[in-house]
Length: 419
Ligand SMILES: [Zn+2]
Image (tube, rainbow, N blue to C red; front, side, top):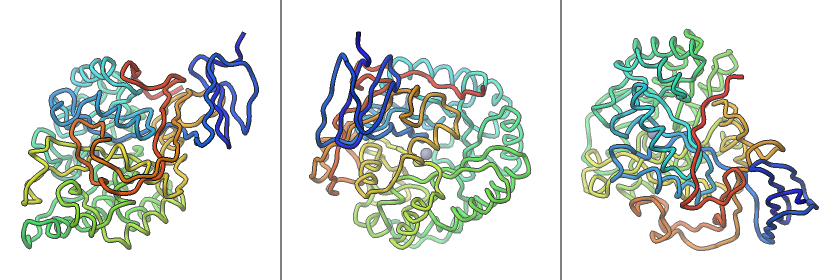
């Protein structure tokens, strides 16, 4: 008789797994196990739950795909992803498109997954059906989404959508930037950075917070880049608004100077910010004011991600494989924003921490000190803004429900658990 299916020993922490669940954990563990893994230089990290990816399947698999995307996330220590309702085709804006993606991801994804439904002017009548289909929440854009097929939500749409979502007990997440065309000073990266100032975010965040307060809707503001935006959220929390805020590794690792040096692979919206802002965002993370960490992995085909006109090329950073490990290298404590807070916010039962009885979702990081190389990228296209950056630790293996993730692993669909 074995006590465990798997027993992992690292210098600081041991983990016993039985039937896919954490059966025991502690500084050291004794017991009989079918398999024992000794990792003398390893560190066990709870699985990253990345609540913000665009794997673009179905419909735009030439941009990424569920298989490549999930394997790249596993290589970063991720165990669960939430796919956004765009840039797949069709976008997820009704029950049929949600079901289509659910079936496809059940076949192809190598990690557990949840699915966002879309909140657009045309999808309001479909929110309830998407909730029944298991959507984890609804995503709205407060400015042009980059794709005409996914229209943005004006204030009236957002208000109506939030009312419906509140009734369904599901959160609404927003891309908070307002749309305004400033006079352009050229088409290079500097012009792109100047075209979407932090004030655009702050105006949109204020509006979203007001609407959340008014409707009682749970609000999740994605990819906030500036401390002033985080402050608005913190103040709203104190006033009783049900709100959480996400940032992405690239807003904590890369600044405007990097954007200019890297070029097209560093184009995203909102854009990268000055070094001072980035440093203050890290302080916000340390202070616990940032609830979740999402990759906003948003790749495209290489053709769309090259060129001199920074306004014309695809706006999305493909950094899922190294952003999170780079942050871990910087000794930031990410167990809350990367795992625990995400599971709690989105009501994922059995996820978010390695407490006994939870899913044994974790990765083992080992020292591996070398620059990030193109040849190690597992994404469909070897594009990343992090190439050449030194990385000191890499994932030796990632475990999903106690089993090592590989190309045979099948992910499960996760619905929010309201019990
Ligand atoms: Zn996104």
